[in-house]
Length: 190
Picture 1 (cartoon, rainbow, N blue to C red):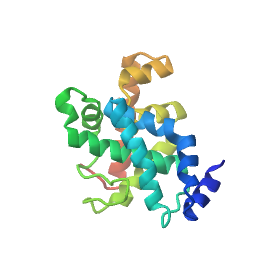
Picture 2: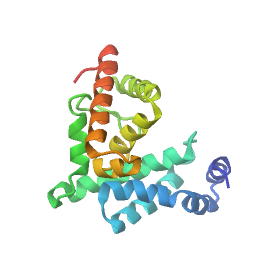
Picture 3: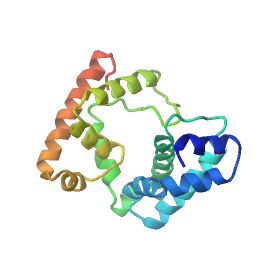
Picture 4: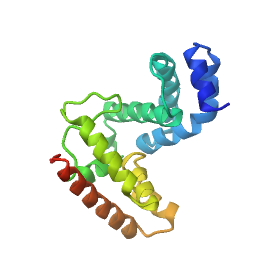
């Protein structure tokens, strides 16, 4: 079943929509959650909640890309659970590491997935980041997204691309520099 058919089932409030979405995107959402939480049980809980949230949100929401929409819900739920459980105190610092790498580039208050933000120019930040990602070469873009969206470790990314950890760090460093330049051109500074 393709995404448009699944979204149509959601719009009709047909319970088969949840089953079809889960069948197609459970593994994808689990990967996102697990990369954040590093706990299979917690990741499973977030995946289940993802489809429940989608059921409650569609309609009125009508996502253009179901995979991205579900992935964003899974990511937000996982980050919330991560904060709630104080995972950094348990030694799972991947989120803190990834976000600390971006501290020199992005404002303290970033746009959230649902569009609410304390930062008044969240649309400008989102637009600038989209331009930045679009202009990056594919490999650099994928590495950037894997690190800062999927929160993969440097070592995992290096393994996926047959690079050394130092190569990945260098690619990410250069990408962050480019992002900072683009944000500054847009008048967005930390």
